[in-house]
Image: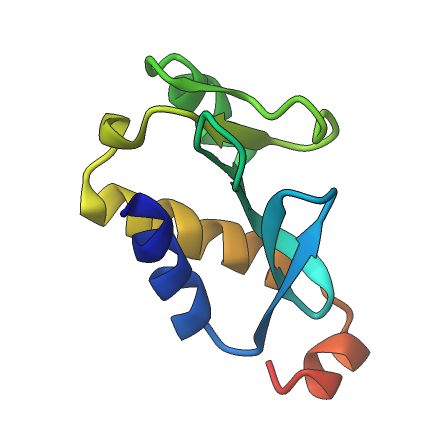
Length: 114
């Protein structure tokens, strides 16, 4: 059920595409750059980029850890869906998207109408 909630938030954002990578990971991309990964394996998890300033606070939550395959940068892996409210989930996903968009070149932003 949380996967559908996360999908809904991701697909409402501008210029988002989806792809399945690494066999069992549903990825949400903007300008061909990942901002959210939903693991389709058990146990369920979501991986998101976050700001450097809040990274340490987020990984202190039970069920949240540094994303294992996204060591560079601040990427969190959330394994416990109930550790955040629906509002917090929305903020985390939107923030991850915005962090990726902010790093795009002007050319990429124009190409993807961002």
